[in-house]
Image 1 (cartoon, rainbow, N blue to C red):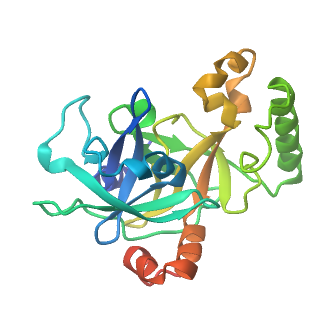
Image 2 (tube, helix red, strand yellow; image 1 turned 90 degrees about the vertical axis):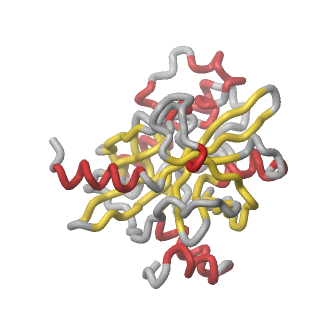
Length: 266
C-alpha cells in the first residue's frame, strides 16, 4: 500500500518526465528523460548518441505529460537544441531544449544517492507507452560476496549462451561499473532515461536514472534467436548513482553542474 502523500509525489514528479522521439534507420524510436536545471533534460547517453547527428531534424523532439497514446498538446512538445553534456562511464547525457512560447515544465531540484534497503519509483515510457510508474523493491548489493559470485556466473552463462560473441567484454561488461547499481524492474526498452524517485519527508529526490538491462544482447532485436531458453530472472537492470553524475559533471562542466544540482553535495 501507499500513502496519499506518496501518490501525490509521483504525480508531481511526473510533470518533469518526458518522452523522447527520434528517427532511426527505417523508422523512429523513443526513450525517456526528465527536466533538470534552467532549460535542460537528462537522459541516457546511449540515447543521445543515436540522435546527436540529426538534431536539425524536426522528427527529434520531446513531449511532456504524455498520458494518452498518440494524443498530446502542442504546448507540451519541445524541440532539442543540442547535447551539452555526455559521459560514457555514467551513461548520462544532458540536452538543451529550444526556446518555447510557454514556461517550461517544472524541473527536479533534489537529488540523493540510492540506498540498498530503500525502494524507489521509476517514472517513464517503457516500450514507448504512455507514462507509467514501476515500484522497484529488489535492489542488488554488488558488494555482497554471494552476489559477486552470482554475477560472475551470470556473465559466464551469457557468454556461453551466445557462443562467446563478445557481448560480455567492455563496454558491455557494465555490471561491475562502480558508478552504477543493479536492480530488477518491469520497465524495458524505451524507458532508458527514466528517473528513479524517492520521497523523504515532503521532498521528492531523484536517486537514479534507468540506463539499460544486462545482458545487452537480450535487448538487441538482432539477437532475438538467443532469447530462447534464457529466463527473465537471469536479467538485471542498471541505474546510475545520481550523485556520481553530479561529481563527474562538476569536474568537467562546473557551470552546468551548478545549474542542475545547485549547492548539492556530491
